[in-house]
Length: 490
Image (tube, rainbow, N blue to C red; front, side, top):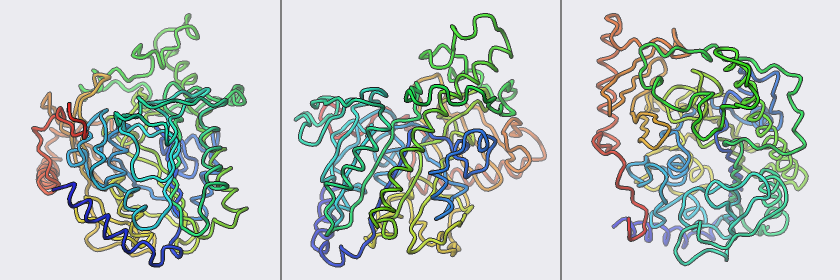
């Protein structure tokens, strides 16, 4: 039934594709992997002065910055599936690191059927061969930082799995190569008679933070500001005590820096590890920012900027030492929050901001709405087009639902609800609950779930959590162990 619906919908779109297609805006969707909002200087966090991102900040100056944009499952593959389908993990079938079932409607399929020339370059990470694009060039799996190998359209395998395709290597750093490929599409492959929808996905700044050689001495003379919770003791939060994604962990040897800190112990060692980690991370961010600048400059020079919607975001947030952590997964703010900046000179007033709760679930319906296409009724997100027009709908969400399914790092699975002022988290495998007052405890170090003064708030949020699960169709007993990939053996 799902395949039949998708086929009928695409047929309807295709029949209308020639109507006004040339008058519709272009789309440039730029996404980085693990780029925390606190590492985008437009957001004004502590890193803004020492590690600015001037090119990404252009989108805030010339468009809108969303202050409360969140992901619904803070892990790479599921978040990408959410973005392309407009549906939660339990609806699109990608809970963890499994393939996206390409039989369902997706944003690129719908844009292409409606007349856009669709293209993708960079980190795909959805396992199944891309569908819905007229041109693509993707990194298989995580991909390499240096001399990256790509699977090009036409070199895909009959198995339908990206990893099985023929690989072609390119000299250089992945951020540079991805930007080169994006620019090559815009210069040489773009059909000037049709609007384009180009998805440019950087690998950086995902671990293991291998930066381009030209940034090797960047930040050598800089002391990176420490977050106030770097030495968090995790009182009242047992899941944090258990996880292996702390700075200094030997898991994956990403941030232990044994050779660089042989003489140090305790807080002094962690402080040094933090500096080493952050400088590698921020050097990768600089590479992304510089390449975003190259692409934006081309839009200006070619005259395409005025008629192009540009989105910059990340697949999820990331811990930059907060709570002593790196990586993501947890529903705490730094992992949950994503940067979201959108520029469309014809429609969005320059220098706008919005504080409404926006989700990566909303990206697909918003881009469909912005480009004049119908939104499928089974998408669970909604267009935030009214927000950048300064008209927040009366029924806009006042809470959001999150769920992470266990994969690795010993990070406990959990689900929860966030409002403007509070956050309730349930670690369903252990039965532990956490409640945070975000106004009075923005760093989330005081779990007030059992505090008598918060009883009414706790009860209200519990009701809201149950309502969201019922409304969204999520079964809290579903552990995510039965993914729907579209491959027979699954």
